[in-house]
Each structure stands twice: as C-alpha cells, then as structure tokens.
Amino acid sequence: MSQNTVEIPSSGKEVRELLEKLKLPIPDRDGMAALSSEGAEFAQKLAEAARSPNMAVLQLEYLKDVTTAVAPETREAIAAAGLEVPLLTAMIEIAKEEGESFRKAIRLLQKNAADTDRQAAVTYLGQLFEQIGVGEHIGLIPTPTARQTDAAPQKREDNPLPESPDQQKTPRIESSPNDKVRQIPNNNSPESDRRYGQSIHVYGSKNAVCFNAGMQRDKTAQTINVESAQALGDRRYDWENKIAIQLTQSELPLVLALFMGEIKEIRITSHGASNEKSMTIENQGNQFFLVMMSKGQAARATPIPAMEAYPITAMFIDQLIKNNPALGASQVMALVRHFAKMYVTPRSQAPREVSNG
Image (tube, rainbow, N blue to C red; front, side, top):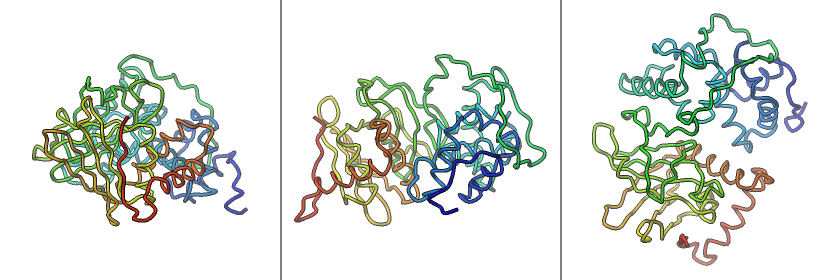
C-alpha cells in the first residue's frame, strides 16, 4: 500500500504499525482504551499523518500530545517522580491543552536531567494534576506492569471531567522547566486575553518571550498573544511587568509567513492604548530574532532557535484553521504565501510595517 493511500486504522495492530512508522510512542492496552475516548479523530489524524508526514503538521502535534499522554513510559516517569498518576483520559486532555510544555516536562523526567530542571518539571506537572483534582474527582490509575499493544482500542466508560469554573481555561503555567514555576496572573490590560490556551515559552539570558493561543478581546476570532518579560536572575522572569501584544487577523498570516521563510523581517506597530507598543521579528537564517518595545521601556530582544520555532509555527497554523474551518492546512499555507508576496516590496524585498488599526 502506498503512502498516499493509507487507510484509517480499524484495529490495535494497525494503529501500532502506523505509530511505529511515525516514530511515536506506542500505547499499551490501557492506553489504547483511553484513546477510544477521542472517537474517530485519533484514527483520522493518524491516517492523515501517515499519508503525508511532512505536511500534516497539526495532525502530528495532536498525535504527539495524545500518545505521550497514554504511553506507559509516561506513567512510569510520573510515578517514579513521586506524583500520583491521573486517569489516562484526563492525561489526554492535559496533553492537548499544554502541548509541547507537557511533553518537554515528561522528557525531563525520563532522562538524566539536571536536578533543578527535573524539580521544575515535577512542580509544573504537580500543579497541573492538582488543578484537575487528582485523587479527588478523577481518581488514580496504576502504573503499567506489562506492555500489551496488540489489542484493538476498547470502549470504556470513563466519567467525564467535572465542569467547574476552575477547570475551564485555567491560567497557564508560565515557566519552562528551567524556571521557577508559577501561574500567569490575571491581567486587566486590553492587550491581554484572560482566557489562555496553549502557551509556548522561549527563554533567553536577558529576556523571555511567550506565545499564547487564545481569543480576541471581542471573542469573535482566534488569535495569538505575544508577551515579553525581562530576566530577574537565577532563571526567573518578571512576567507581571510584561510587554504584551495581541496580534490582529491581518497580522497572524504575515507573522506565520515569516516563520515559514516567506518574509525576512516584519514590523508590528501601533499596539496598546496609546499606540506605544511594537514588535519586530527577523529571520536570521539560523534563528529568528524577536524584539518587543514599549514607550518608556528598554527594548526586549529574544533569539528564537530553529528547533523552538516549530511548535510556534504550528500554533499559528492551528489558529488560522480554527478561524477558517473550511480550509485545510495546505489551503491556508497557499493563502499565506500569496499575501506574503504582496506584502514584500518586489524590488527591494524590504520589510514593511503592519499597523494595528
């Protein structure tokens, strides 16, 4: 069977074969049963990723999240760290919400990480589990004792997670495993959306930058908030005094075009109540270089290595698709490339400003 004719898997064996092909974690029997709670979405995205792994960016991110959540190695690492292990269906929801931050914390538990990094990961995961009420509402599961991966996904009656105000879009954990873990405080600034989705942090020696997926202030569309905080020393950052910019619908595709290599540099201007905030991102070949500015404050520069830019790029694609559900990733990218060509000056390829308003 050719790669482009991969069918949707209908058995545990077929699921395992496709996961092995994509080099993703292999669930055991409990993991396969938990994945059945995802319905047809898991099997559909698995087939799409297997057909075109280089193009299925969003599908692969989803698959990395859910397979990491149900992998027996994940439960073993969590238990070895002294944490109580949530039900796998709850772990899936956590992984989908946290994305790369969750996967990175699990990797730090599984490898011989520095004590400070490992402890930060333990604290981060412990706070996530506490927010969903481990041992209180959703119960615990045993750590795996045997690998059973050939079984087909089984239907399982798991109690749904309780719907409480504290569990609906709780504030994101705002630190990387290299920093002291605490929560982003609610912020009444018009540039900040108080309902956070996935967040991705990049840490530099002097400043850090955070990309938050969320809704526009008027709740009419998905967008991304970009925030920058200064270093306080000892791997701590001053997020309470951050510079924050919420990207407009016209800015989202152009910033994505930059991360995709279609634009060399972009300047975002006229943000804030008095148009006092701006941001520049430059593609420097081996990295991206982001600078955020606000009147009366020193400019905050943060380099973004290529490996850190991948989940950020995927986040932009995801938000654009959410705003245009009738379009697929390939159609979104075709539009992005088209408008990137219009944005760049044909003769000089010089960057132009994108003004908010």
